[in-house]
Image 1 (tube, rainbow, N blue to C red):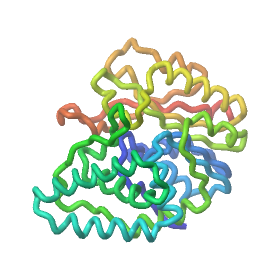
Image 2: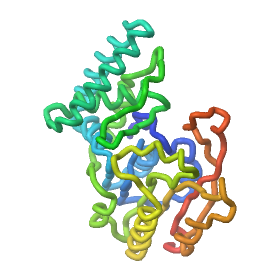
Image 3: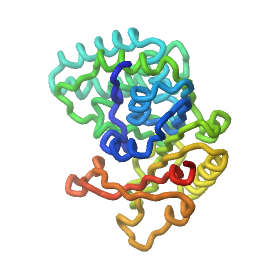
Image 4: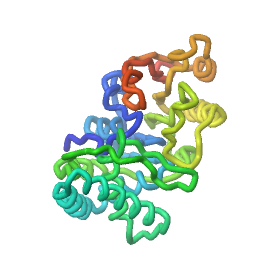
Length: 297
């Protein structure tokens, strides 16, 4: 089975916390569900280690999900498009690279607006290109849904990682891929399912909310609704691990998640914050791993 890693850099990606999350894996995984798949660090780890028979991944970000689908179903086409983009990008001067980035960003938003299925491969290739050349790998959209992250002055990024794309494609062949609300995954989840839930984090400050990757926000109301969803699938016997921010990083008296998940095991783990406009504020912070593993077994 191929070793694969996330094909994009994703805000909140779990590569750095894989060791801690692995400790909570069940000994056997036959069914796996990830309702907020994001960059897929946990997904590819589980696919490589357990080869589950049934897998469902989902995300509300339809362009992200389209990229997963294109890698699964048309990987050679993706490699071809990315190779061409990479070749052209490398031939440009520094200023030319910047102009090329904004040209491709405009093209991507045009395709996103048109919603033509025939453009899905090009749109997916542009999704990866923009991810590799935008500021901090952010995926942020404005109120109209247009991608608006600025250029990061990348001189020689690896835009087409052929070997990894092929490895990802191989692992995704047995995966059902959906775009929509996480609640739509409920039908798939039963007592034999392991579920990893990595939602948009509760912001530790008002300015931290700028990383929204869909037109819809994810406020405390949505966090409570997610908590109720997790309690519901837990009552079905599903094995669950969920991640979120730790409010106690900024307010020792903020018990929002401790109260919401009082019936679950809550572990605080150290993670590096990679996205902040102030480099001095990037560094180790506490994150939450919420699970029912102890209560299920």
